[in-house]
Amino acid sequence: MKTSLHFVIVLILILSISGCNNKSQNAPGTSTTPENSLVTDEKGKTLYQACRACHGEKGQGMEALHAPALSHQEDWYLKRQLLNFKNGLRAYHEKDMYGKQMTPFIKNLSEDDIEQLVSFISTFPHEKAASNIRGDINNGKAVYTKLCVACHGPQGDGMIAIQSPKLKGSQDWYLKQQLQNYVNGIRGTHPDDAFGSQMIPIVKQLNGEKDIEDVVTYIMSL
Ligand code: HEC
Ligand code: HEC
Image 1 (cartoon, rainbow, N blue to C red):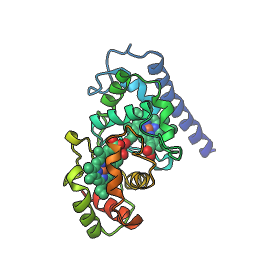
Image 2 (image 1 turned 60 degrees about the vertical axis):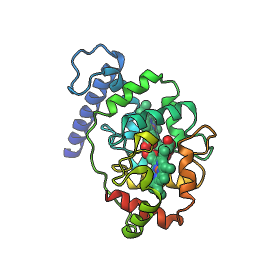
Image 3 (image 1 turned 30 degrees about the vertical axis):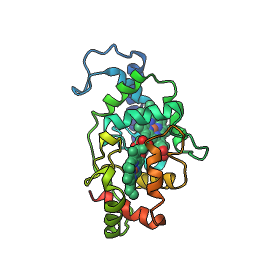
Image 4 (image 1 turned 90 degrees about the vertical axis):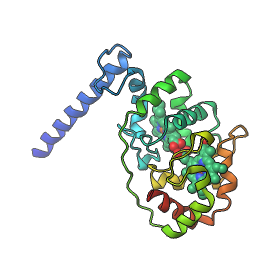
């Protein structure tokens, strides 16, 4: 009896939440008072409804769906990646099964839509991701200092001048997945992917999965 009452309450909550979303989806741009004062454009918020199921309400990501956190990331990098998905530079390889999940949601968006989405994502709070990979942090630090620091910076903050993304704030499973993708040529191999291709000669110097897990362990400590 108690269980079914709980079920009904949960159902009502779900229905009322999705009801609100439908309202904002049906009437984009008609709201004059954003609920969050940081949100200046309702369009980005409306567009983000299509991303929530995988990237989470606040861009915190979802490991079960292999969808990374977005909330920590810089706006210029998010915009460039979304354009890369749209233009086929990312999720290009036939074996990039996770990347290919993104493409249908980006393909028909305009550059303005992408900018509105990114400015909405930039309002999300940054939360430090939990770390489950336990590699050798000393070897990880040595690898990072030798191979990564020049481009991603001593604190993993990335560098806009050379378009290298922030690594600090990412989840360990996602960092590992991307490094493996570069190793296996699943990412960074499109002929026009000038930035992604810079990662390829670097990851070739990593000593297998051990170095990958060690360097990820070190990045998570930054
Ligand atoms: C069906 C699930 C799904 C949906 C819906 C989805 N994504 Fe993704 N997204 C993913 C996955 C999985 C990845 C990781 C791809 C990879 O491994 O390269 C990803 C990657 C990304 C990245 C790259 C992050 C990085 O650090 O390089 C961005 C940015 C992104 N998504 C934004 C969005 C936005 C904005 C939307 C809504 C318009 C969206 N996604 C909708 C699953 C999804
Ligand atoms: C020559 C500069 C350079 C070096 C050295 C370098 N990177 Fe990168 N890295 C980049 C650039 C540029 C990108 C963005 C690629 C893109 O646009 O898809 C990138 C992307 C990444 C990504 C994907 C991030 C995301 O959110 O999807 C990871 C992870 C990464 N690098 C880790 C590393 C690690 C670990 C090392 C050292 C072993 C390293 N990089 C060395 C330039 C570099």
